[in-house]
Length: 58
Image 1 (spheres, helix red, strand yellow):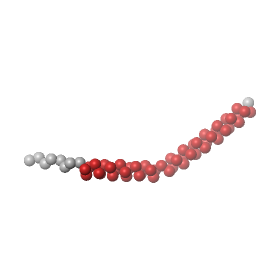
Image 2 (image 1 turned 120 degrees about the horizontal axis):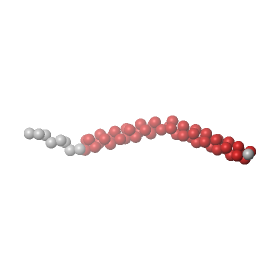
Image 3 (image 1 turned 60 degrees about the vertical axis):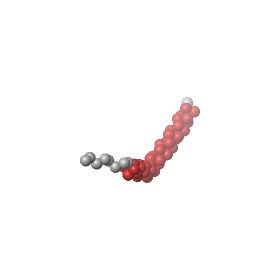
Image 4 (image 1 turned 120 degrees about the vertical axis):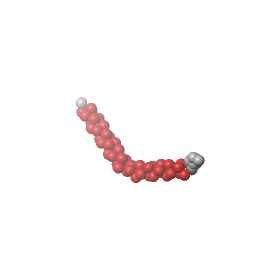
């Protein structure tokens, strides 16, 4: 029984460490999301500039 309790304690410690790593990774993510949004905005602007002008109706 002691072995099961010890294994459970080690498993809980590992889960807490994974949760902390996930929390830290998520906290660092907004900078990347902002960079991605800016990048895709620049791609969209570039595609609009490269698109042919619409034909003028006579």
